[in-house]
Image 1 (cartoon, one colour):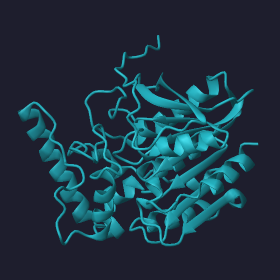
Image 2: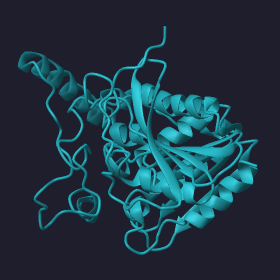
Image 3: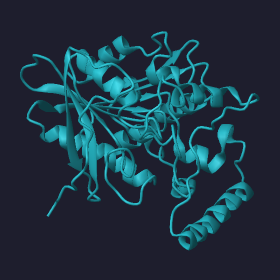
Image 4: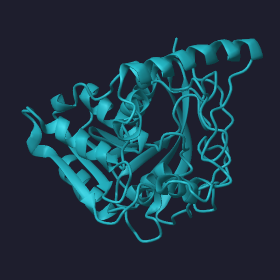
Amino acid sequence: MIRKEELKLTQEWDKTFPKSDRVEHCKVTFVNRYGITLAADLYTPKGAEGRLPAIAVCGPFGAVKEQCSGLYAQTMAERGFLTLAFDPSFTGESGGNVRYMASPDINTEDFMAAVDYLSLCPQVDANRIGIIGICGWGGMALNTAALDTRIRATVASTMYDMTRVNAKGYFDAEDSEQARYEKRAAMCAQRLEDLKAGEYALGGGVIDPLPEDAPFFVKDYYDYYKTSRGYHARSLNSNGGWNVIGCESFLNQPILQYSNEIRSAVLVMHGDAAHSCYFGRDAYANMVKDSSYAENKELLIIPGASHTDLYDGGGRGAIPFDKLADFFTKYLN
């Protein structure tokens, strides 16, 4: 028997962006194949009739649906799509214990469970479903697109490959057997410390206060997660972060192994001023290399945009929503 967990969902509008008067909004829940109940915001264009094309949205890694995934979802609903922004397992308003854990498998399943929900929604045309993954969920979105044949179109925005950055460090600076061994040893030691303490130690969210000599990308994150621009009380990155061992399994599990077998359409978009741009460029290159399905793949580089500019526009409209609408209209036809 598939059972839903009873979740306590906030009913008031507590997003980091204003509510649109062109969209209907409600809270929904659905269950993934691990029995974890996920919480989501459903956005529907006002006055829409018939079965609609639909998009599931998640990310960034360590964020909640009240932040930029909700902004993406609401904005795409204004453009005629039924959209679903959800909290991943173990985070936000979604279920799952213990809290603040991540898993390449479970988090890919979260996206597939969202596609399940949309496929059975009476307002949705089940043959016209896409997904958007932001930051670390951009990599998860590509992994999901390689696995889920129901997905017709995928956008990976300002993406991270979370397995690569955990196993190799930023810019692959820790790509050695010795560096990975030390990380594994540290994680194994932390497991025992957590068990002795009776609780899981948190790794810490975005650093606060911000050091004067912080790298630009740290300042970029601070400007989003630690200010009124993007702070949210349930966001991991805004507060205590993931458990120290929360991403342990990412060290051994590359998620983009079969990305060049994705048959459906994919748009990878990144700002050229983002520290993370190499993730998007490399993911696109690997996706089209030796692929029989490269004709519907696209890399969009946005001049001057930083990593978090593609979270909320950065105050200058950096997210090309018209481009996204054209992409999904074309491939969710």
